[in-house]
Image 1: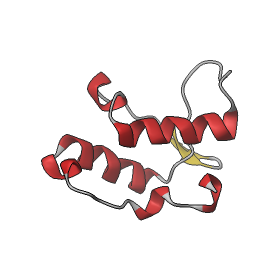
Image 2: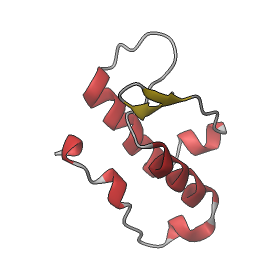
Image 3: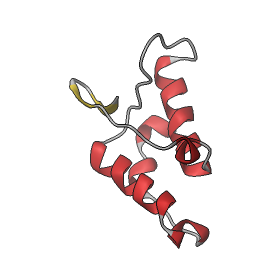
Image 4: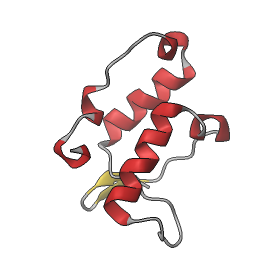
Length: 78
């Protein structure tokens, strides 16, 4: 599940996406917010539009360039 607050969207991603450094950043964000003991479905506290941008970037060749993803740099990460 991806989203913030009560607005959650169920999203399926290919396992290769899970191994990408951008996605591991999202997993670290989830661990900071919910801990490592999440039960059931993985929940990622990220704006859904930002999440889709990250997945699109991972799937494209653009991720090889140095790209800043502003939606990942939120007060939650600091």
